Amino acid sequence: MARFFYNLILHLLLPAILFKLWLRARKAPAYAHRWTERLGKVHFPAYDQSPIWIHAVSVGEVQAIATFVKDCLREHPSTPIVITTMTPTGAERVQALFGDQVTHRYCPYDFPWAMRHFVQALKPQLCLIVETELWPNLLHACQVSMIPVILANARLSERSAKGYAKFKGLTQSMLDRITHIAVQNRDDAERFAKLGAHPDRMSIIGSIKFDVDIDPEWSHKATQYKQAWGTERPVILAASTHDDEEAQLLSAFESLRPRYPDLLLLIAPRHPERFNACAELCEHTALKWRRLSEHSLIDASTQVFLIDRLGELMPFCSAADIVFVGGSLVERGGHNPLEPAMLGKPVIIGPHTFNFALITKELANQGGLVQVPDQSALGKALEHWLDNKHQQLHAGQQARAYVEQHQGALDKLKTLAYAYLSSNA
View 1 (tube, rainbow, N blue to C red):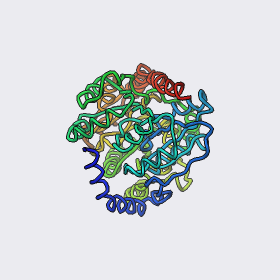
View 2 (view 1 turned 90 degrees about the horizontal axis):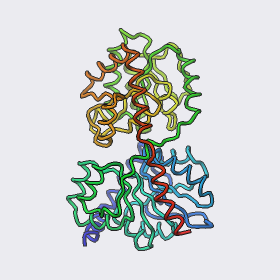
View 3 (view 1 turned 45 degrees about the vertical axis):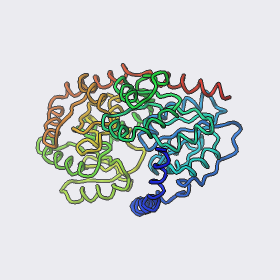
């Protein structure tokens, strides 16, 4: 009954959903590409055996599951992999990471007819959902077709748990259709259990985001960048920033420049549709700035560099001295602090970190991260590490040590997933 009312409301919202897609396409034209896939109109190659379906909403989830996909391609080369995302940036990341080794499609909106057609066309032997992307009709379609579903790297913040609890019947029916939930930590497990997840179908494996492969090319590019802009220059990277954060960062940067005249700020906005808006912010300052998309090279005179191309962040992260992780000075819940931490970079993050609450707390306790309440405190934290190179390096070492201590979730996830591949081969 709960799903009936859910579907009724969803169909009433269909015009608004399509209108929102149209608006997004005006700002980011990539949303208009292959848009019929979002309504379940999809075709797949003729596979020799049933594929694995991995659903990863956007860039963060694609990056999180990347090592699993690479291992699976190597260890089960005859098993096709289909990755779905909801965003064009996620699609671009899939293409950049895997090329034609996998098939990418946009996941349909959660209409029963769209999901039914998608699942029947794909006929996967396993569905792996990255993190906590729960959709009633997706799970129902998998259950009807007897497709096991693993919720991988599952996390559930207090805020999200309260949201799901408001729709107890619908949430319970979704949880009942999940074959196994591989949660990141005990707090997540307790929240899932309170919502109705059965303990026998849940395991605590840690976060696969600790098990990311470090590409040697990142270090190679970082060396080239440093030679271009000056090997002794202090460099701050602002990663995955959102609206209003860039303005705060530029303000903090300008206040630091009198003391550190050779300081360099790298800015990487989270969403490509904001690249031009961020460029306009830079244009309205007195700073000498350049942007990556114009094939500009950073030299000794560059003060701000806008990283406005996808897939370029990690080499710049490798080249930076200090990394600020965005989505945290504004209420977006913060982004992944583990990527700079695994490269041995000290991390600064704002107050809004509910997406990575436990990791933020533990990384701070380890001494690899500083959490600040506002722009003023951000400037002071940057100043402290710029003044104290030894402490800056030690914080980076502690950050890397924290990541190394928590690795191993990937092997546990592979054991879970491969068991279903073996039983369905």
